[in-house]
Length: 623
Ligand code: BES
Ligand code: ZN
Image (cartoon, rainbow, N blue to C red; front, top):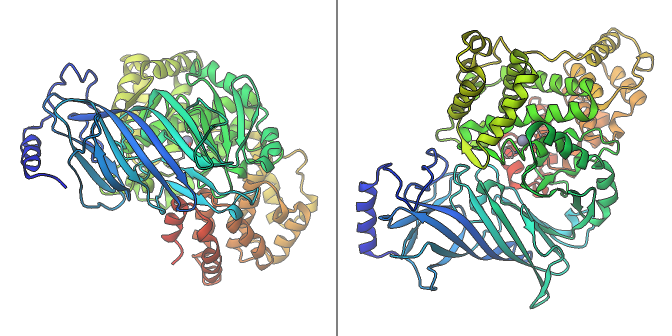
C-alpha cells in the first residue's frame, strides 16, 4: 500500500526531475537511457545487491531478501526497480521499518516497476520476496533431467533482461552493481555463483540445509549475476582454472577443457591481464539454452561441447573473451549488443589462432561469415545494422548473428587496415580505458577516432564506420576470410554432387570445422535418398557424438525429408535444449507438410524439458 502523501510527493518529484548535474553523492554521470528498464538511475541508483535466499526445489522458488545499497540524489523520494513475476511481501529500511511501495502494471516482457518510497535518511532498502515457479531466468530440473538422476538442479540465465525475474534490482546493463549472497539449499546440493565462492563446500545450517556465501567486489551489470544448485563436483585444471559439473560428467568435462589455463594466458597476451581472479566453467545439464554464458569467474556452458576431441572449444574461447569484451567493457543498452558479441567474436578468433593456428581461425571466421550472410538474406534490413532499434521489442528478438559476425568483421577490417602492430595496442587500450564501465556505440566510435584513426581521412574512408553501425548489410569494405582448408571441402562437395560415391571422396584428416562446412554446402543440394544413405553409411553422421556435425547432418535430413534419420532427429531435439540447434531444425520442419506433424509431435514431448528461453522461441515457430 502507498499513502496519498507519498503519491503526491512522487508526482511532484517526477515533474521536477530533469537530467540535472549529479550531486556530490552521485559522482558518476547517469547511465545512458535504457528503454528496457524502468529504473530512473539519475534519481536513485543501485550500487550493491546483498541476497539472502533459500533454494526450495520442491516449491520451485527462491525465497528471501535482496538488500539494495543506493546512491541517491539529495531530493530523491523514491527508487524504481525492475521486477517480473516476483511476489513482493514487504519492503523495509535499515531499521526493519516498512517502506511504502507499489508494483506498477505489468508491461509485456519488461515486467513491473517496483517503486519504493525512500526513507528520509539511509541508503539501503530490503525487498522481501519470492520468485515465481515459472520465473523465466530459472530452470528447475527434476532428478530425471540430470545426469545423476538423483537430485534436483537449478540454474539461472540472466541475459538479456531476465535477472529481474529472480532479483528485484535495476536490471540494466548500464547500471553496474557489486553483489554478495548467502544462499541456503537442501543437502547435498552445492550452490555456485558468478562470484568469489567464500564457502566452496557450504556450511551446515538448520533443517538439513547448507549455506553458501559469495561476493563479487567488481561492479557488474545485473545480467551477469548467476546461480546454479545441484549435485555439482569440481576439478581443478590449472592454477586459476577449473571445471564444475555433475559427478557423472566430470571426467569427460575435465578432459575436454584441458586447454583452459592456456586459453586464459593466450587471451591475456592480447587483452591485457585477466581481471577477475579465477576462471572456472560450469558444464550444465543438456537443457541449457545457450552454448555458453559468460557469467564472471564462472562461465556456464552446454554439455553439447563435450565432443571428446576438444574440437568445439572455440565456444570457451568466446566466453573467456567476454571477460574483456562484455564483462569489463559492457554494452550500456541492448541496442549496442554488438559491442559485447562482435568484439568478443573477434577476440575469440584471435585466441583460437594463438592456440590452434591460423588455419583453424580462418575456418571458424569463414563459417561465421557464411552463416551471417545467409541469415541476412531473410532479415528485415534494419535488423542487419550493428546499432539496433529495439523500441517496443524484447531485446532477445534483435539478438542474432549480425551482432556477432558483422561486429567481428568490423574489427577484422580495422585490423587489416592498420596492421596488428597498431591494432593490438589500440584494442588493449580500449579495454583499459573503459574497464568496468558500460558504453555505447557512439563511445566506441569516439574512442576509435581519437585513439586509432586520429584524423587520417584515408583510413576513416577505408574503415567506413558508419556503414557498419548504421547501414544494413555487410559493408563492401569487409575483409573476407579465405580458408584453404575449405577449398578442399568444396572440391569434394562438387565431386559428390556430381555422382562420385562417398567412399571415393578425399576426406583424410578433416577436422570438425571442415565437416561442418561440408554438411552446410550439401544442405541445399538436391541429394537423392540413395546419396543420403551412402553419406550416412560411409561417414556415420547419424551416430556422430559431435553435436555440430550431427546438427549439420540433421538439417540435411530435414531439408530432404529423409525418413530413416527421423528417430535420430527426435532424439537430438529431446535430449538437449540449446536454442541454436533447436531453432533452425524446428524452423525447417515447419516449412513442409512433411515436417509439420513431426515438429508438433516432437515438440509436445520435448517442450517440458526446455528452458523458458528456448521454449519461448520455439513457441513462436511450432504452432
Ligand atoms: N552472451 C551470449 C549468450 C546470450 C546472448 C544470452 C544473448 C542471452 C542473450 C554468449 O556469449 C554467446 O554468445 N553464446 C553463444 C556461443 C558463442 C560461441 C557464439 C551461444 O550460446 O550459442
Ligand atoms: Zn557471446
